[in-house]
Image: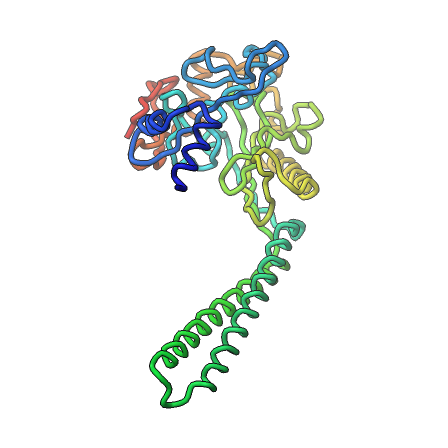
Length: 364
């Protein structure tokens, strides 16, 4: 009955009108497990076109209202393929769009002169306080249940004599066993509540990673992940918000635990705006430190970028495609490829033949 109810709901609200059509969708999953995402009932723009363009590129899904020639829009904000490539900070899964595999990227391997800074703060308390309050409430409920069960077990023990019938002795043992289980559960939840209460006083430690984006310097800012899943990207912080060349061209990322910041239900922002702004301010401060540590200002910003082929005075222009500049950029960035079988990442030694080379989807 439950199965039929679920099938009726799916056929009523999905594009598939029969049970057979639903089962046929599972055949599209290559392998023993996986998830098939089907997009339908898309919102329409003012001109009547869907907000997602699924016809312009047979291997991608594009934002329909974004000009593909507009360099001010990062590729991850107009291409679903580019977005899913950086969706996870340490990709450990295969993603296919229209049957074509996505070549995922590790941001840490795309940066020149990457540096990591440990940041410790007591400011991120909102989520921890909620978790501590929840744990304390659960411990109280568990304690009440344990006391009630222990009281019932004692009362039953007083009523049952040494020569009581077998069924009464069985009931007593069951009551005592249930009381013991509930007591252990109450003690465990009490310990968890005390641990979370103590953790409120402990500083939260985050790892900020910064590096130069020598492939496309106009794409800079911070990538904010939550439990390895991308939430915000290209967030300009510190001097980057001023529009000058100071700290421009720097990409950074941080993986924020759930207990530090909680994302919104759609995974596009964070629930606590105040603490999120504090995080961005902290990243801005460390960005300034990174800029000093790499010494770009000392050697000259213009000279630094000219070394990698940025010869145009227009900051948004792409670097030169001259072979000597392409080779120099390639030599400074490790070539990392994900094994198709074990999904681990491999770093390949530099080779001129690998510059602009497209590796097969099933590399291993």
